Length: 359
Image (cartoon, rainbow, N blue to C red):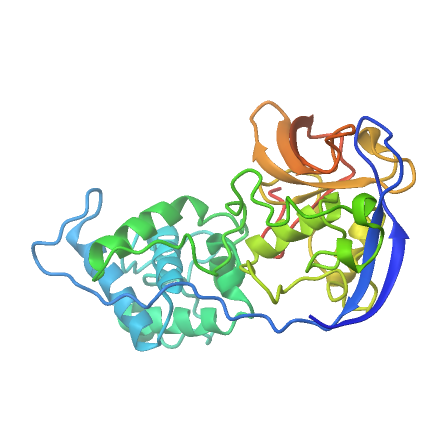
């Protein structure tokens, strides 16, 4: 990894206890070339008259098989095939409908495509293969669609008023694709982003590395992400990379290349402005995998530099569980911690581009 220059910026402390200043390193790093997402092989359809899936009719199974076949013809990944089936489930229940609804009275077919010229003729929209092909081609034109949550990827094409409309149909789509295809597949363990599912406790890869307090504020204490080892910012940036499908060097998101304006992501103090500069969404509702941002003084954070952590679990009682580093009093300040926090305490939640705040 090439390091063009090295600079130091004072960073934060810990919520609840003022421990003193620690440091974050600003390394202007050569941007890493993003690795292509591996979202599973294209599934081949295996279906006959004896194929049965609990809860689904033969009509629905045949239409799902048509969608899978259209995806295979266009070399669509397994994840893309699942998204396509999910959207059809959410739009028509995997049925070729010859009617629309209130918002779209001219919608027709498996994907409820409108009569606006974008989806072909009436006959095209009522043809399962042609309508599925049209949807898949539109999906493939969405930049970064394989890194989006399935419901958000589908909504980029369908433009439903509720971007999370399709979320409840995802388990059914996975079930159908696995039942109708030539093998059992899992989206876990590959480089396709799975927001909110990355991480299992303290899986930070540099947990045994020396801190800047042990070896000095220099290159020996700098992680491959361009932050100091075992600081809150390094752990949070590791989680961002992990959820975006980048789990090994060269990492996709670094301190020195995160912001498009050439500035370093820097200390916790500047993470909110870094998110804004990158155009990534922020909000006030916790979502698993989102970065928790504490402005200076919020929730007991350092009055000058603030703090960042990551949402590990969202509860039904108005609280969430956060995880991070540098959140305990000494001598455990540079180790992993979790704690339960009220939703109102943080200053903001910084979402990945794969996430949006549910309104």
